[in-house]
Image (spheres, rainbow, N blue to C red):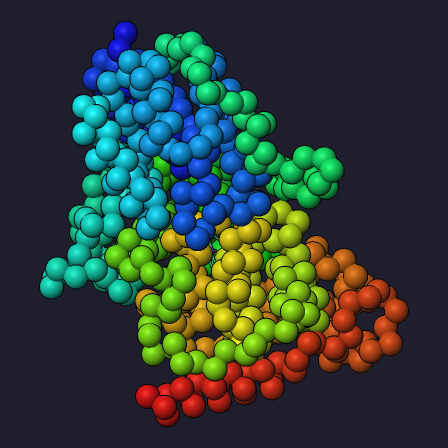
Length: 474
Ligand code: FAD
């Protein structure tokens, strides 16, 4: 049987896989290939947490392929040269993949498609990860959207998600190809003498297609009924936690939509699908404004007086030692699990960019290295939204108050107690602002900072003054 290379990237699943289906429909034998090529990701080489997840997701994919008679063929190096060498070794006549939308990858894939076609191979990309590819929706004037609400209205008016497709029950096995590597050779996961810093992650996550399906089932069963309110309460597990699974393509968004079709109250379902809409919007924005991972979407902010970040200030934020409990709890949740609750992401980002006036790029980079769901589109949108520099940004003058937010959204202080056990002995209200409760000499707090790094009132005032000066200058 003639071979088609199915080039797996961020689509690590077998159901709902357009590239795999294209090979089968063409009557070709799919050869599942993964090529490790971090140097082709431009300035955004995947971070350590992301790599650790990828290792497990690739192992899960390999195991699912083996269960069907095939396996994952792993390579490392230049993607084009590797695909050409595999085609030469196997006589493959086609290369199929599902598209990615990061600027460096889009440019690389365009080049690869051109080169492979020149060589006489059939080379084609498909939509494997979005409900609407970035070029499918535009404003009435034919421009990209810059505001979410009209974007989502346009999406709903053209609602036509791809149909779900089962995984193939059997796939042909193909002999070893010269240059193949073992997954462990890619060194994606920490190995001795490096400490196994990722070990605690796996108490919270099961990478791979089955883990994604299980997370969706749990969400639909336990949390969907109270999603729109519950999603803001960080102590409870009322969000789907599907973000890393979506990033690595272990589940297609249209499968989620299909499985929600008969589940839960309609308003809760709509609220959830709208969040998937933010993911769509983030990809739309990244495709049309490819400079935004590194530069303000709104150039008016180019003159903003960011503070020169003192290394110890940044370190305190990164390691959950600012003395502001909700911020520190979020940063420790991130450190321990590779994930942080969405509302808390907004609060830690607001604290960094507003109270400390540290450029959002520093925060985006830290998230990039530590999040298992690090995603160039969503991360860029999230950071620029909070900093007030992006599309559809939060009002630029909005400064989240972590104490008020904490008392409203975590009134029992459970989220704080979970991630900052040193504050657990304090009464719930005091856990959000220990300094107010006269805890300066409180022994139970261990070495937790007795006072915040900066006074919240001062930080807020200075941020608003800097914004006012920026406005005056323009
Ligand atoms: P749910 O509430 O269950 O939402 C379902 C899905 O919708 C998510 O899995 C995600 O794919 C999508 N989604 C939800 N909210 C958003 C949003 N605001 N923007 C884009 N997509 C969204 N998300 C990432 O996937 N990767 C990132 O690197 C990332 N960085 C962020 C940085 C900042 C500063 C902020 C404020 C948000 C960031 N987000 C990021 C968005 C959001 O926090 C996560 O998608 C969400 O917390 C994931 O948890 P969940 O799957 O339980 O979400």
